[in-house]
Image (cartoon, rainbow, N blue to C red; front, side):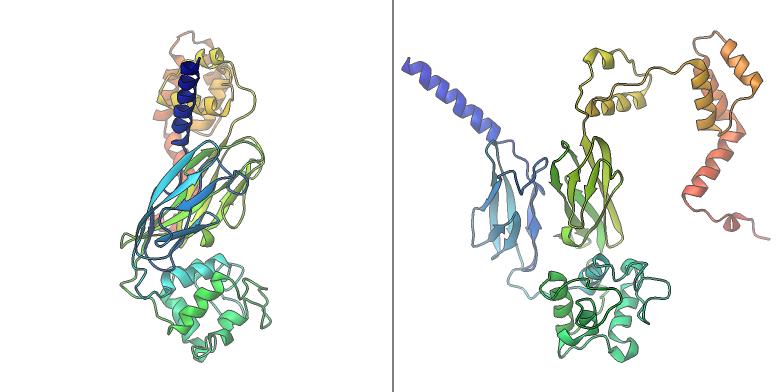
Length: 404
């Protein structure tokens, strides 16, 4: 009896260890490259505010973690461990340059703050004529021009290096001075500190040697959730000198399917329905997307999906997507439906009466394939899709005219 109990205990313990090794943490590694670097951590599929997941540092003298945000304490390496009731996971951490002087970059930080708070947006100072005599480039596409406008235009009246708190660049968006754009941030925010410390440090201009952003990455890239659940996203910026920064705070987020998932200004996704949609993240002119899948509750019978035979590799992807969403495939269209769809999708017009009669009277089993090839060979196919892509890409027809 004791042997059986010991064996059962061992099996349960091994099962718990196996489960405990499955907790995924993103990003998979943390590189804190300055004393101001921060890194948000997320667990795909979990709302960290309610999931009961705890984080701890293996070396508090290297990195500390609070509210799932890692903060550098000193140079070195360590590990951050995340634990839940059913899982455990780890990510390696490297802290470097902690003992080196740090200054905010106009190109990569000041511009990001002004874009996030709406200062360089179209309705504000990013408008074609600016606002109130103060014009900035739209979403900061021209850092050199914006630097000149802020620091030199109107005799530099917008910044006070000897007393940054008196700068119009800070007093207006915080409401200390009347501002038609309203309050954009408060004096205790990181946004205020970035602008104030940049001014106090001498207002360094954009440099040719500044690291340039190459791409951004939103994490998790894909996650499957249920209605009512929440998922925090993390936005990573990758720069030309090889370092990465967590720019979640300064990203802008939109949902392509608000009836299924909404997203707030900090990248927190809330699931409100079923289906699939994308969350688009933007930072310093770069874009990336994350896909959110919310399967429908009713699972379709496996034989219903197995009964549909894919005719090409596109069908295979479509059927896999339908299976992941628990959506049954539509029945095969009859000849008349297929004929109308094929004409409209390829050449943008309906078939003539003669074409329809000939197709419906044809008893050949390969008539649909034959029709597709015929439509693709017609000149209307080229014209229709040339116009369609021209509209999509906003092609200016005047520029396509031959030179005289």
